[in-house]
Length: 108
Image (cartoon, rainbow, N blue to C red; front, side, top):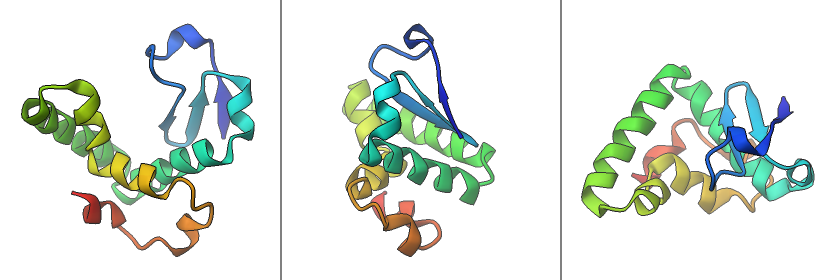
């Protein structure tokens, strides 16, 4: 389910976020962006695989470790295994059909 919200409600650099079962978007134009939506749907699949709560725990811990390592929030974010999988496969619209369970582990 896609939700549009006021731009002020998302962090400055976020155009959207996946919080199962929703994809929350900052701008109406993103509703038609197949690559962006595919990226967010990959996150929804990751969240389901880890029973949602474990996804957020893992995501947070991995972000903290990577932030300590890189000393840069953006680099930490870009190198989280969940983000690496989503960015690497966002242009492959059929990726979720062939994706195996816990594929994010290949991006650690």
